[in-house]
Length: 269
Image 1 (cartoon, rainbow, N blue to C red):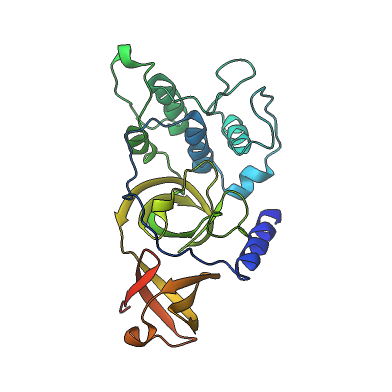
Image 2 (cartoon, rainbow, N blue to C red):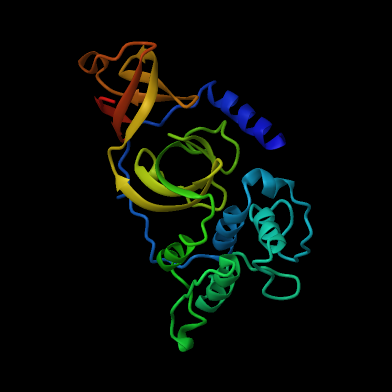
C-alpha cells in the first residue's frame, strides 16, 4: 500500500509541469551488452525474478553488511536474494555490489536460481575469475526471469528533464517506472528500447530498437506555440511539431511517432 501511495503522489507531481528539454545534439543511442555486469545489477535482477517490488519492500531486513544499509539502492535486493537463498556475501560482512560478477560466481547463483532446471554456463576453468558480460548474463537470465517480461518502452523523462520526479524513477510510455541502479543516459530519451520490466520496475535495458518509436494513446492536452502538450500515461510532455499539418486537435487521442521530442507523424491504430 505504501509503494502504491508513493507512485500515485509522484504521478500527481508530474502532472504539474514535467516537460522535455529542447532538442539537442546527442550521442548515438547504443546499449553495449559486452560490458561486464556488476554484482549489484545481477542481484537486482535475481530478486525481481522471485519477488514483486512490493514484496521486496515488505520483506524484513535480515542482512548485516558493512558495505550496505537501508539508504543504499541495492540493499533491499540483496536482502531479497538472501531471503530466497540465491546469494550470500563474498566475505562475512560484505557484498561488494560494485564489483564485477565473475563467471564462477554467475554459474553458482544461476544454478541456485534455476531451482533444478538444467542451466549450464559454459566457460573455461582458467577464465572462472573473469567478469561475465551483460550479453551472456541476459542469455542465461531468460531461463529464470520469472514474471519479468522483455518489452519495448520509450523513456520520456528522467530526473534531469523533470526535477519533480522521485530519485531513481523515470516516466515512460509504460507510465512511471523505477530505474534504480540503471544508467539512464541522455541519448536513451525518446528512443525505442527493449527492457526487462516487472510490476513497475526496470530490471535491465537490453537494446535500442528504433530512433523513431511510436507511442500509443497520447492525448493532445493543448496546442501551444511551436508544438503541443501531450498527456502520455499522466505525464505532460511538450512535443515540437506542426500541429496544423498533422491535424492535431485538443482533447483528442493519437498514436504518435516521435523523434528527438518532435512528433513526426500520426500512426493509424
